[in-house]
Length: 147
Image (cartoon, rainbow, N blue to C red):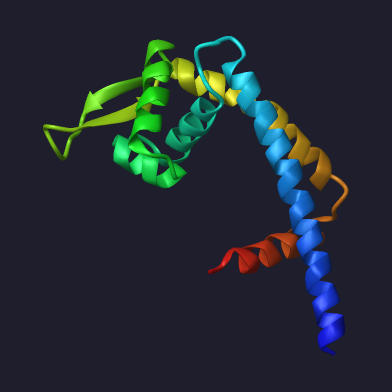
């Protein structure tokens, strides 16, 4: 029984690897679209903008922690995003010495435009599933994502 289980687990691992590779390729394309008109920006700028869109205004330490970046690297990315007017800095409502970072309307619009292809790809891939299959897939992924 362990041999069969091992083969099944290996097959799942291969499929997850393929899924992650595909997701990475689509994400890289979205990051490229995000910085296409801003040669001064690095692809990480897309990930910072996406994080801000998902979690809202935050202090740089929260962003760095959420993305696994060191403060120096994040500082350079924020400088580029601010220079491109895609983010703005505001005084922190909780700490007068700190500031929070928030996407500007231009940053939100550019992020949405760069994510269009990513959403379209997912929609295309999911179109071949019936509703009950999507429900099962979502439930299985939820279980897999549990720690």
